[in-house]
Amino acid sequence: MIAVAARNAADIAERGTPCSLRMRAWFEGSIKALLWSLTCFTVVTTAAIISVLAYETYGFFTIQNHPEVSVWSFFVGTEWSPLLGAQPMFGVLPLVAGTLLVTTIAGIVALPIGLMTAVYLSEYAPARRRTVLKAVLEILAGVPTVVYGFFALTFITPYLLQPLSNSFGAYNAMSAGIAVGIMILPIVCSLCEDALRAVPQSLRDGAYALGSTKFDVSAKVVVPAGLSGVIAAFLLALTRAIGETMIVALAAGGLAQLTANPTAQVQTMTAYMVQIFLGDAPAAGIEYKSSYAVAFTLFLITFFLTWIGALVLRRYREEYE
Image (cartoon, rainbow, N blue to C red; front, top):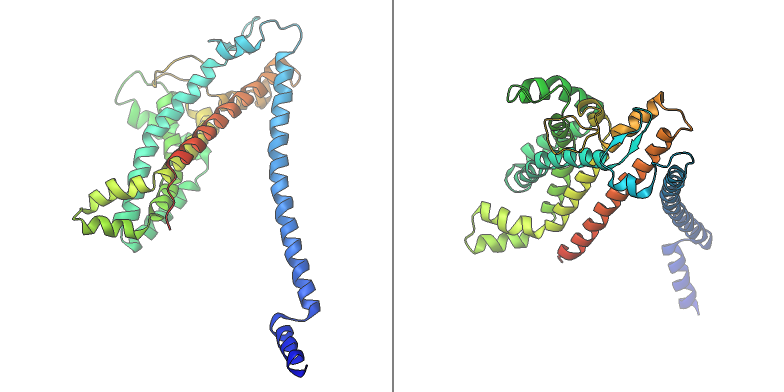
């Protein structure tokens, strides 16, 4: 009996008094409730945003006295001029084409450069140099996007593009795409480097044991092994490029046209929304409501990219022990 009591006393002393155990249980329960509430807040916020977009988009398509507004004409129409003339046109394809053109140029600029930079940081750079370069990338990521827009207007277009061809005007898709590519470059570099450094060292050692060079190990072992993380980085960066606003609003121009010419000025979906919310259109007018339909279309595009990314990640995901 004495031995049992002594053992119980020792257990209580080791784990804490019953009061402290109750306090610990209450604290753990409170943390769990807080985390659950934050998760629910995220889900509710997302659902609220989707609900607002869907409701306002439905109001745009059901607005009276505007027979030119229909789901079919909106998604397949090739003319977008809601603020011009007595007969406005609401075909969203020019805005979609401008958005995809700028995003494509940004991807061509950022994705290969970002991946090669990540390979250098992960496989070649010494520790001190890696620290300095990552600090520079973090500074680049902190630059406001409006600065990139002015950089495109005052440097990229007049000093890089116009000396190459006279077809580049003051506003063009190429300068906006290059600026957006520079903006998303830190995202690609950072996420790709994290994915490559997560590859087990044993894979590198095995490749070196077979006589592979450092380039062979980097290109044929490390990058394929971290492919799922690299693809995730690419998709996240492209999604960020699609949703960029200030750069395209300043540098791409304001002419909505269905073109794939990078020298022409274009208008993206986000730039149109900025134009509408500057106050030129009445709050209850069809032009104002059209911005919600454009925003809902942008949401559908980003959702489709995210869904494709989830399928690709599920297909190429690699798990290491």
